[in-house]
Length: 409
Image (cartoon, rainbow, N blue to C red; front, side):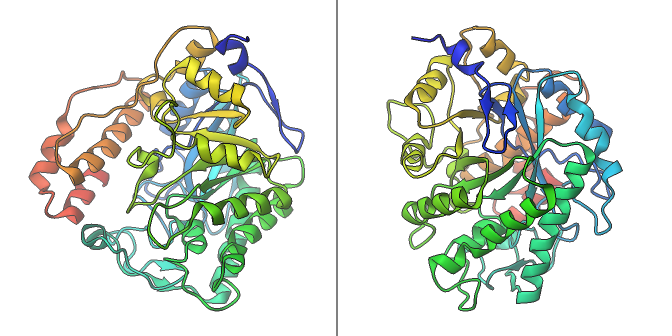
């Protein structure tokens, strides 16, 4: 039986012909390191320079917004209306001198743009959040017109071409976690009755047209990935059965890598609150990945829950997946992939401090990891102190909008 380090070090050839140097990938994390005009910064370049030297074969950036007027967070990077690839070149070159492949995750937040950034966000349908606390942070969206939908599809294509021209090796379309693509897929948030909704086939049209437009812009040799929910874990929402049908059609559409995730802001399985796995296995979404493997030959990446080299190796041996995604553990230890590839028996750690208050816990975890990314970008070590707790308590978790502003802005 092959040792974990040998399995993790195996290269992977994708459908398009691109080769990933090994089976470890840094999954997307929201860095919030754009400048006031939402352009990449030197700090962002330094952060990815650090990660590229950490050993992961693939690095997927945090969500780069395709529309500068639709932001999920204050310091998101966004592709401007008049795109300029030169603005992205320093970031694209941060992996120079390493084997790492740097891909950009492209996103549109849809209704998940906070009130202090967007007074009236857009979405497939004018459906507000059901949770009262979350609804105080995000305004009820306006339903997109058909022309606006086509314009957003175009923006995905323009953004993909821009970052590839800048030197990035691939792109990932964010179709999970309740953002716009995910909103089109879910019957809870897509209540349209036109060509963009009304049944499962029409609900997935938006994603498939985005994939087609991106492929037309970047060509056949550039890898395209999609991040997809296994389900959104809400009654009447995007189900596992429907998700698997999307997987089948994405394979037919010619994508090269599918990353499996799950959940939304209202049911955050991606944060570990609704694990879709057996108790005997580490990763949250392995059961789903095994089902997806039966219907597609697209390379599969699973992110969430991996802690040990042997657990990662077992997942690869099972044939259910091809790439191990690591997110928050690489904030705590940017050199973790290299240590795993070197055969060290190390454990991935991702846990942020807890306050004992549900809303404060989730806000604190996001904020703590964001703070640590900013420290890594500045060349500083991880700081495990709990200063953000005081911010949340002073803001008052009974006022989530104020709390959200103070920890995110």
